Amino acid sequence: MPIKSLEGALSTIDAFQGTPEDFKLSIDDTLLDPAGVTMAIITDRILSRDWEPAGVELRQGYRVFSYREME
Image 1 (cartoon, rainbow, N blue to C red):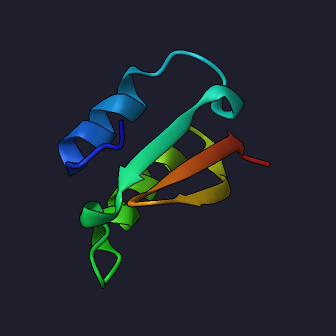
Image 2 (image 1 turned 90 degrees about the vertical axis):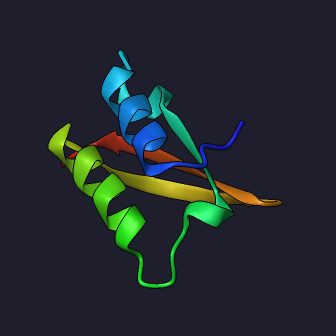
């Protein structure tokens, strides 16, 4: 189920216990603002875990983001 709130995305990131390669973050398209502020906040939280973006899959109505250990 895609996440529809910033708070939900951040708590999902914080709660995950595992490798970044096993983590997939599904974000509803309604959460993506034109200026990119929401994704900047989410990406900042990802970077604070020493992870970096590793790709995105576009699905109908949402996107699935994947990550890897920061190099």
